[in-house]
Structures are given as C-alpha cells and as structure tokens.
Length: 296
Image (cartoon, rainbow, N blue to C red; front, side):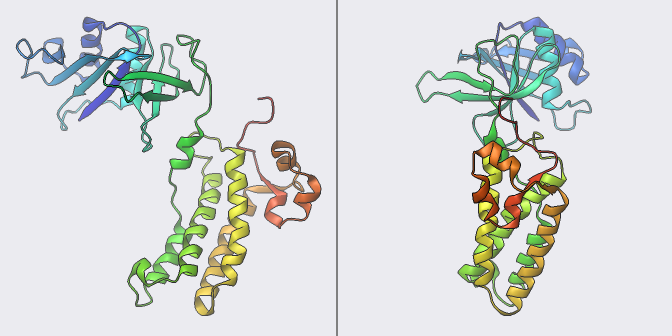
C-alpha cells in the first residue's frame, strides 16, 4: 500500500519518522525515511519505507510512503496526513478520489480537513500551485477560498431505476447499447442523469454536502429534454420508460418543495414570469437548498 503526500513547509525527518512509527504501529528503527537519491544508506528491510523528494512552488516536499498490504495498522490517508500536519505544524496535501489531477484534500494543523485545488505546471522543473481551498487555512492566508464544483460533477452516484431500464433494453435479444436506437440511448442516459440528481438529494448531496445552483439548472434543462425523449419512444419501450421516469419524478418531488420558482428566480436572476410558464419541476427547489445563497 502506498501513500502519496505533499508538505508545504520544512522537512523534519525525525518528526516524520515518529509519526509514521506511531501511525503504523512499528518501532522507529523499522521506519526508513530517506531522500529519493539516497540508495546506499537506506534500510531496505524496514516495514515502513518513506521516500522524500524536494518539489517547487506552494508545496515543498513529496512523500511516497510504502507499507505491506497485510500490515495490520494501515490508517486512512486523511488520518495520516492529519497526524503529520499536527506534528509538523504545516498543511499536508493528498490526492482526492475523484479522477481529476487537481483534486486534493488538505489537512491543516488543528484538525481542519478541506478540499484543495492543486495544479502542476508543464515545465521541465514542475512547479506546484495551490489554486484554492474550500475553507480558509490560517497557515495559507494568501490562497483563495473557493468551493470546488468540479469534483461534484465527477462524483458518480448509483442509479437503480435507470440501471433496471437499461437492463430491460439490453435483454430484448439485442447486444447491449449496440442494439439500441438513438432515441433509446438518449432515454437511458438522460434518465440516468436526472435520477442522479434525485439520488444526490436523498443522500445529503455527496461528496461534499452541497450542489451548485447552475448544475441544478442544467438538470432542470435536461428534464425538459426528457419530454421530447419520451415522445420519440414507442410501444413497450415507451411504457417502460414512462414508468421509470415517473418513479424518478416522485423521488424528485419528495425532496423538493413548490415555492413557485422563487428560489431559482432570486439565485439565478430568472424572471418569475418566465419560470411560471415552464414545466412543474422549475417551480420546485430542494429542501434544504444545497447551494450558497447570494452574499454567502
């Protein structure tokens, strides 16, 4: 198992050794902390192996920590980063699960854990820039504070209703998506996106407990498209799709309230009359609202 961390301050080798020994439940002499270019003096038999390398920019050192997969004590990367941040007195970064090169978590002294956006330049001597953090970090007062909506777009949720509809399409004697018409493909993919919104609502808006209002507007636009999508289907496919869409719409209703479009009008600046002329889903807002209100 490998942990990849970035420091933002000085390299304190003895302190790093102490933290690794404690976190992995090993004596200090079973922890090897060495420079990437140091081959001769390493303890290659150590259970915990940490290789450090100097980097440039807003982060200063990279740590690659390797331990056996069967080691009983294997803390989560966030816990290890938090322990190092507390001991070293500096923020420590580690990659987030989302498939975005810039998506990171930052653990700060004092226990703060927040999103961070980290960019690496394309130069031969790469420079790292902490572009933003989701919450103020006292040790990094000059870094802008900005929510990272891109990780929300990349986060995938389960869509059981859509999956069941897709399985039915695939089970009609055709071969998966190759046997589907263009209308059926749009029906499945658009239904999945609409269901994804309702699942986010019902599970407290993963991964970070909020949702951008412009994403919500995109979802409502997509629901408009589903009206035309339904009209292009025929026979049993149309019936199955209508049933699936009704189930997803019901979940949407359960987690929204009809406010006659007031919230969307105030947040997006859309005219109330314009919203009043749109479909019923434009008249409803999530309860509670998952996006920051103007001025927040």
